[in-house]
Each structure stands twice: as structure tokens, then as C-alpha cells.
Length: 437
Image 1 (cartoon, rainbow, N blue to C red):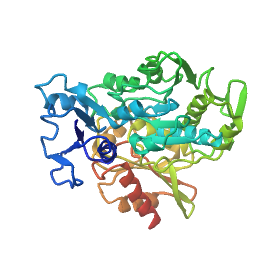
Image 2: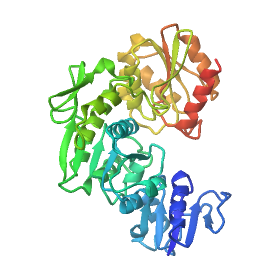
Image 3: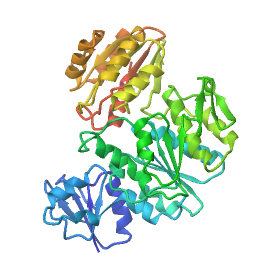
Image 4: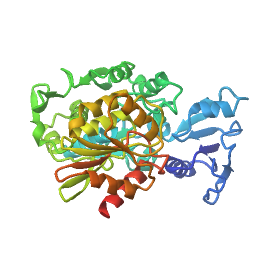
């Protein structure tokens, strides 16, 4: 059988390792004509790498490639997508356990997945944490046993053509994003629904009660719907405690994760875990000890009473709003990046609402002109357009505005691609600059 792997990034390399063990004729297709390939692997490299795919029996799509790109590049075969699979689809097809928990949403997926995995481990379940959080699904396939649990983070890029659903599907907060990749918001929501649409009545669909998009996405399921932050799943009670059913888990003051938005993620994780195991001690141990993941309001360092936080994972306005609310002390907020033309109205409103606790907004990147214009139009003027692409200069400028007891937070609200390779590089450069102060 002839197999072609479209895209040779992290998932592409993982897919190659998997299919090399099973098939003889493997081709790697990538837009980079100079990419080095392993011995015995054919190459289809350059600008036309997605064209002429009908010669292959199986086409392995990597997440960044939209299925419509494949259709447009192969007009002679309107049924070409029937040959398309992915690292994620193949994982679900061959996984030896049905004990799979899949998590999607706009922001909060990684934290929720990590919480669930830690709860399962704390309760004695052998658990594998995979997916968009860092480990391609097929990379661990040979390590998974029939009684193990798998927690998999899935973004819309993996979900758009998913043909399977997990036993427990979780949808955290959803708001419009990635509209530069999707045709429209409807397609974005539809992609998320693929996590739920193949469920049976024996499965569970966990959703954020009160978040209209999350409710709509979970409604595609044939399984049992359980809403968290509502009356049936875990919820926050009067801002004082977190509980599920008639069981108190902990006081909110005991939680180490920064930000009330993380209370929602905790409730999502508890609700998913509760369908499997009602070990309150395991839940409490995880909820009261886990701290923020890297790049997610991560405390980097304190210098002369000023705390520096790395929230580089903030690639949409909603996550920046969450960071502004999470840090109650006076703060300098660094905002900006590649502009995908998402609506900034609610972010501007949040900045104005919190203006008494904002020392300064520093605007960076290609989005600076639009953000500054919208802030001015909203009547807010306490910002500086840095005009700099040097993150160390930006960090020093932020430090100059901060006083002892303040915070400096990089919470860009935009992707990184105008100045950096990805959000990890942006965050790492920020950390390096802070540690050099």
C-alpha cells in the first residue's frame, strides 16, 4: 500500500514512525523543498506537494492542512478525502482501550486535561496524557494497555475530520477563534462537534453550562449530557468552595491555579473524573496542589517586588481578559501579535473596567495599530505602542512602568507568528529576557 504523509512537522514525524513499521512504500510530502528525509523514504517536496495525491492509497493529513486544501489541489478526484486519515484518526482506530477522555474548547483544554490525568493517576489508574498538549497520539500507542486510561487534548485542526468519539467527551469554554483557518464560525463549531457526534448512549458528554457554544457542541452527542458550572456537574458555590453533587471538594482559597477561569477548568475536570471514579481525596489532592502550566499565567520570577508572568499561550482576546481578571494587583500588560481580525470589543471593555489596576498597556507586533485605534475609540488612552521587535527591550520598558507589588504579564491576545515561530518561542524569549534583568 502506498502511503503519503502530508506535512513533516512533529505529528508528521510521529506518523512516519508509525506507518514505517506497517507499510513499505512511504512518501513524505512537504512544502519545504530542502527538508532532510530519512533513508528509504520518498519525497514529494515543494510548492505542489498537496497536488496529484490520487496515486496514493492512504493520505495522512497533519493538523495544519485543511481538508479543503487537499480537495482544491486535486480537482480530478472529488472523492479524494475518502483516502484521508490522520495521526488522531488512526489512534482512535487502533487504540487497545476504550477508556478515552477527549477534551476540546478554545482555551483551558491543556489545564483541564492535565487535571483529569492527575486525578486518574492519584486514584491509581494507569494514565496516558497525549494530543495537542505535546505528545502526538500514535507516539505512545504501543505503551497503552486495555485497562489503561487515555486523556487526549484535541484542537479543531485534529477534529475537523475525526471519525470517532471518546467514551467521555469534554467541551470547555468556546468562543470564536482560528477564523483565519476555518471558512467561518459555523465550521469552527462543527469541527468541535466531531468529538461528540460519534458517541453512543453509553458515553458521556461534558459541557460548560451557560456557555452557548459549548452547549451547542455537546448537543451533537447521543450520550448522557452533564453540564459543569450548573446543577448536575461540579460547580463553584458562592465563590467560596467547589463541590459536586452533595460533596464539597475544597475551598477556593486552597486552589493554587491562578485565576477564576481555572475554577471552571477544575469543575470540568472533576465532572469528567466523577463519571469514572468518585475518589474525593484524589480530586482534592490534585486541585489543591496543581499550579499553572507553562505559558499560562506562569510565574517566571519576582524582581524588587514585581512579579513577571508568562501568558504566551494567550492567542485570543478571551484569554487576555482572563489574565487581566486573574491578576488583581496593579499590572503592566503586554498585548499584541499576528492580527487575525477577531473582535476586540469585549477585551477593550475589560481593560476599561480594570483601568484602576492597569499601570500601562504595552502594544507590540502587527496588531498594534488596530488595538490602539480600538482603545482610543473606546475612550482609553493609557497605552504605549512600543514599535519594537526586541522582546528584551519590551520587557525592560514594562519593568520601568511597574512598582513594587505590581505584576508584569505577557498576555498577547494574538498569535505569535509576526515576531516568533510559535507561542513557545515567544514565551521562552520572554522568560530569557526576564531572567536577564
